[in-house]
Every structure is written in C-alpha cells, then in structure tokens.
Image 1 (cartoon, rainbow, N blue to C red):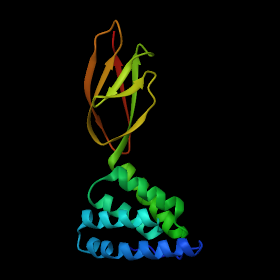
Image 2 (cartoon, helix red, strand yellow):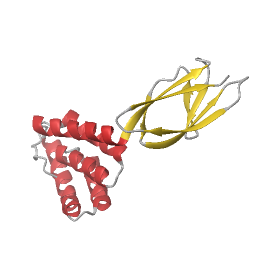
Image 3 (cartoon, rainbow, N blue to C red):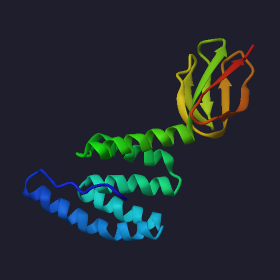
Image 4 (cartoon, rainbow, N blue to C red):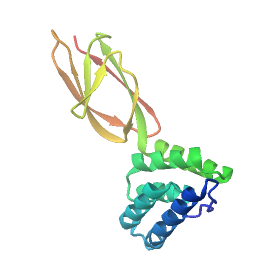
Length: 173
C-alpha cells in the first residue's frame, strides 16, 4: 500500500465522487495494515464502485494477491498498469502482474491425432476443438478430456507448471 495518491483531473462532480471514494476507502487501508485482507477488499471494492481511484485499484490487487486469488489480482494490477497517472506506479503494477503470471500460471498446449475435430474439455468445461489454441491455466493438476465420434474417449490428468508452456500430445487412434 505504497502507491502515491493522485489528484482528480475531472470536473466537480467527478472530484466529489473521488473524495467520497477516498473516504470510503480509508478503513480498508487500516484493515489491510492489520492483515484483514478480505474485509479490506470489501471496502476497496465499494470505493471502486463510487470512483476508480488509482490507489484503490492497486489496493484491490494487493488484497486479492494476499488472499491467493491471483487471477483477480492480475486483472486489477493490469488495470492499475493501464490507468495510474504515475509512470512508476504503472511500471510496478505491470511487474506485479507479470510476476503473478509467472509464479501461478502456465500455458496448456494440446496436439491431437487426428489433428482436427477433437472436442477438448478441461476440468469438465468445454474448451473448444482441435487444433487447440494454447490457453493459460492455474498451476496444478487439471483433467483433460478428448472426444470425437468414432474414437475412444481419452481422459488424462495433466500438470501445469507455472511460467512454462506445458505441451501434451494425445493419440486417439
């Protein structure tokens, strides 16, 4: 919670909303300081609904990071990197987002034989057909299911290693 506060450059109504949002966020800063991250997050999200202050966007990202909700943390770090008026803050937010991606997510790449028309599901959710476009998944074990008319169904657990392109080939024949 070391982001620099930034003044509002919009009109009076926006400035009033920004002031209200800042007031709403104050208890969140205290709660974050005593490691009550979920309570702080609730307050910061309410503040963000009123007016998206750069320091509140950063604080939301940090709360999500602290409670282990890395996908959400990345979303808010990326918002911070795109919208904070301070270049140093934008760069720090970009670095945090990239660091979380490398530490907690990896790419899943699947090739199949036959190479086309194989239905792919990941953890029970349809994910498309081969040729399969690589996608980002959280680290850990995931269940891949492959089906195609005329072929035996293939189901296999795959482990996603963070920061890597995890490649798996499946022969359905």
